[in-house]
Image 1 (tube, rainbow, N blue to C red):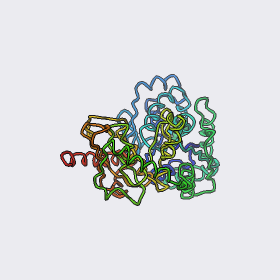
Image 2 (cartoon, rainbow, N blue to C red; image 1 turned 90 degrees about the vertical axis):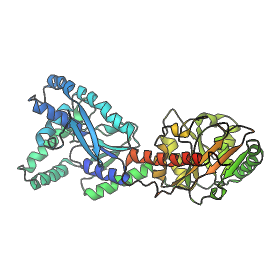
Image 3 (cartoon, rainbow, N blue to C red; image 1 turned 45 degrees about the horizontal axis):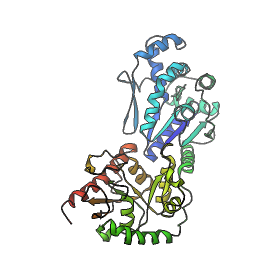
Image 4 (tube, protein in one colour; image 1 turned 135 degrees about the horizontal axis):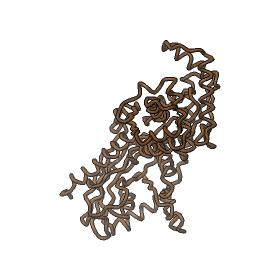
Length: 434
Ligand code: DC
């Protein structure tokens, strides 16, 4: 999940973003800190903030890295943690000036996009929804009147014991607003599909609640899908079991575990196209699978696979829609089958596959458990006229895979690895058993 939180200085973006990141277990990225670090470098070198040429010339000397320690972002400017130096009024003005230089923005573009590609994030900035992550799932533009923001900032400064006047703070805010929103590149303007939130009259808690509400509204599944009549599924499953099951020599081990009364993700090793059929035959719960969008266009087959509960995924567009659909199904109380190895790997020890975190993300976000299943066959893949054994493992509960010390991508990866390790262990345990 990627959340873009844009808006002018002082609207409270960072406080909101931190709180949201904590609640959702995702990474908070403060992109302003990157511009501030460049501003700091320029100021330390004694270069005027308006001296574009020299600012651009500096970029080659700058290495910026972001680290996340316990969910807190640390900016390293040429290896130095500069967190303590970039929040002054002077550096704010430097940051605003350097951020208007296109070369500076290009310099920071990939750093920001890379983080958004690799993590579930809430990013706060000015151009996150328009430039950095234009396809973010949620875009919010947080504003407050210049007066309300000046009032808050003034109070903060006075509490810190800094000397200032309300008028001075207001003038600074207006100047930065003007710089940031009128610059030629990536001005701080809302994306067309951003949700506008004015918090002039809201306190911090109310703002956070409102933002969470918007995120839930955008990403949550509101209505439970109707339980469809599964008569067709049951008939086909029966016939598959009798006819195909016979020719595939399907045997099921740990039959007592076939039925689970909760929704779950079925996680299995993947050796053959026939794996999904073998699992459908073996399990009492209906297991729904994602299928390539293209096969849903083939007449008759299309009706058949739809009636069997398969749902389409568009591989080219990325899988946001498929993930949403999967979450919808799981939250609706049904089960989804996933082969976390991604592609079929016949004749291969499943332990040799690097597992992606997708399955973990779906289990965590839907709050469901995982059932590990091992498909065992003599020939290294499911084949007609050979014995194919489906061994059903113990249900892994959501509590077992909560991993509270981890968050975001790390947590999802840990869940996926944990479940797939169980799959492999079943295979090892049953290696010589009949
Ligand atoms: O959010 P902030 O106040 O820490 O940002 C400092 C400056 O950096 C601000 O004046 C505008 C600029 N900025 C930007 O242009 N684009 C971003 N994504 C983030 C900040």
